[in-house]
Length: 625
Image: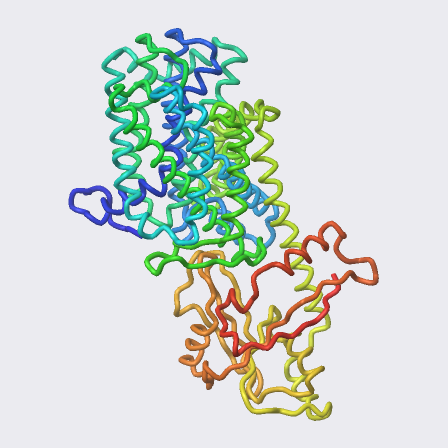
């Protein structure tokens, strides 16, 4: 993560390099919004007269300023969890201020689930809107737009297992070219009708909203499309640092977006036809085809960023205990963020292609777009208010004024977007509800299993003292038992001893804790104590962005004075089979049954912890919940 001071960028080549890299990862979604936003809003207004155009362009510009520049770049990005941002990182940061904060957890989790909902729409609407430029260049090819979009989307998801390390190097420069192209096209449009620059005055936005009645309120749902992707500034802060992201936004992305929206408004005022994609009418006819190709590449990059973000958020949720263990593959040694989650990839592909086929045009998809993101932004604002009070120690008045202003803006956009509910807006909400249900069911089930296994704890001293009387043989070797219970006998060890009538001479009881911070320094990783002769209690703490590695952990424990040979350990892993409780006080069937299915199909603990297969002993046991 780049930490150089952005105040002297010409002296900081690392800052520039990180800023260029951020262009391809952070700004892909918001950077391709001009392809469909102004066109969508103009269709909603039903008119192309001067007051409407000035009002709409002013709304677009000031939405970018208020939501992206002020809220995210200047407020949200100042609150980080050990350098990491995003709604899950913010939830983890605030959730540990006090031990029980269910509302904060619920807001953070549902906000994350909503991102999955709109994340499935982004690739479909972006690629479709880019290819729809063919309708202007060669109207006879319009029948091929949808099939070509499906092919591109299929190829995009199919290539994910190979990783994006090499392609990622080109993302930044290509997106830099995209933003420069948008800026030049926008300038060309502005020269045709320079009076459009009056739209920089917020008066035109307020005037339009005040005098257009209910139509103006509904238009806000379309205007909001210009900031879908703003959440990525905050969510991707840990990858690049706040400085490079702010530099890229203020010097290239924001000016390019403003110029392009202004240019689109200018050519409409100058008499350009509004049928089809207005974005492509900024381009001279001979250059239209190269622009379509560049637009398609830009939308593919934007889609890749969304997919990568979904992978990263899934890993965070797994680490925090809110999702089933899924197989997470590292696709490159160059960056921790280069991962692949197969289950998420293929489900996203099915939903995205299904949306493209179902809605067929970007105009139709625009009706389904925005509800989930606007709801996520509302929840982020609520968490920011708490952060202002508890982290910045602001007064209630100051926090209320700032967060209240953001809340009014976010709530207005959310309410307007809700008007699209029956026109397709239910799609991302339905997807988000499914994701949230998985999170809730998994967490409830996992907590129930942990509680059940923790019943009737036996002190370590008492258990070990009873071994000779019970005829338990002590055999050579070192056994490692993973356990959630600290300072007591691990349940899986009790189960093993009960059935095998033996126990190794040396025993390690290991508890893996996930911190509320993304990373934990190696020096703070391990806490260990010999609580009984040859019985070691070990607690290893990992950040929610880290993946535990048991062989590496054992090597570190050896350096702390624990007399073990990491290559000659036996790991005893509990394999739970879920059954209902006999006393009818267990989990409801609607939670227990899907949790059982999730547990049965989740990745093996041994794979997740990278434990060598030839050192593992699986201990099957029934757990009634």
